[in-house]
Length: 344
Image (cartoon, rainbow, N blue to C red; front, top):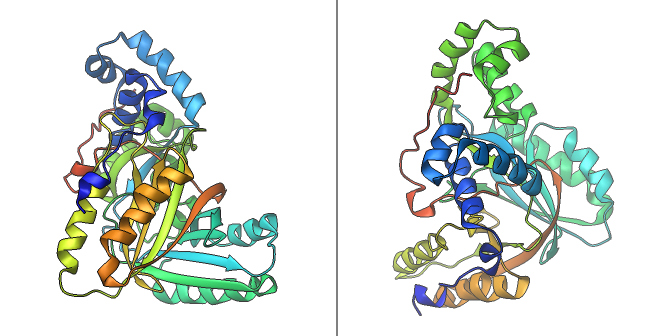
């Protein structure tokens, strides 16, 4: 088996114009890109860019946000939790429980090997441990099976943070307020930010430059397109000789994507420590295609390493925002550059 077994074209990409797909790529890689620069790169007029931008914002539920540099912010490991229930849960009640804490950043309901995924980030491992236990106790009425793993690092993707987590960061108060504004609208102009925060324009511009050390990328999130299936899996291995070579093949598959894709094939890929060893969240044409091209592919690839995979399709978002966007996965590890003069 080689990565050619994995390579395929996603039907949902062909349902959208090349201009739309390229525009989403530009916004994903730099949400602060100017109308003029998009016009230049897309080869269409600025007025056409403005009209198309309004259209895709509405059609895809675009949210302009930031991908944070968690290392610079001294955040501990993020955590991924696969949750199963022995009795039918009240999702509205669970959403309310999750909303009471700043620790859960994303929660989705799923169908398959587990019923819910939670992405969590805490100010300290001690704080996370306390929340972890309190949630298991609160959900015990549903016969909860709560499997938590620490994220070693993200090979691909990011966790959009909620404002409650940003509020807990130990950084300059002015930077914190600006970061919360950018977290909810990273295309905001300096003039608008100045008015919203009651800061002088020059103060905003000066602090913006200092603030970028905490930001990896100005990017977007978007709602799941109607013709896209989001498949997730948690994997557990028993590594043997040759494991690294097998992992290298898997990494090539993660970076294999359609040219000018509407959304990246893999939204999250992360090695874990704890209940599981690896997690992925990918975008596919259907649950059948996702199982064959994602789950079954990895089961075969890692067969001699005793892989066990539990998979599920994402049904709805309970909390936070999913990191759906379009990026060049092969360049994910490179230094991201953006324009910082989006001032008017």
